[in-house]
Length: 153
Image: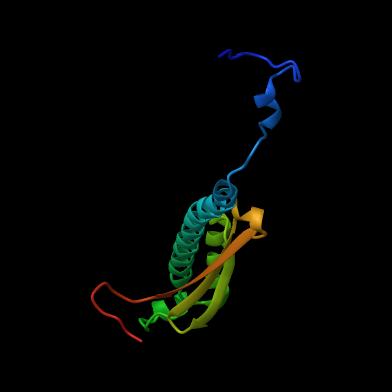
């Protein structure tokens, strides 16, 4: 019996070359978008958590700075502390500006100051599915007190 190996006369690359085609595994084609979305959720989810921490930290610091702005005239008379709304608003704005966070004083009630903040995180991977940013907000409250061991209203 005589076997012929090598190229065939009909095709320059041989009969086998004519039958080879590029194929994409359906599972692989379906996994690529799912993998990108999963990576996006991890990376951008972590970024959102970081933005949330930043918003909470900024709100806490701004509330503390605002609560320190007590009315001096009342303090000189020995009365319980009361926050000066105008100075508290300015102190909170200065603190938030230094931190690069949007927000401000939401309420001043006697010795208590409330501050709200908002931070926007620009997504990295989730822009591929149409989510370009994630916004988070935080609120904090601080109260001015006269001494370390006692709180008066």
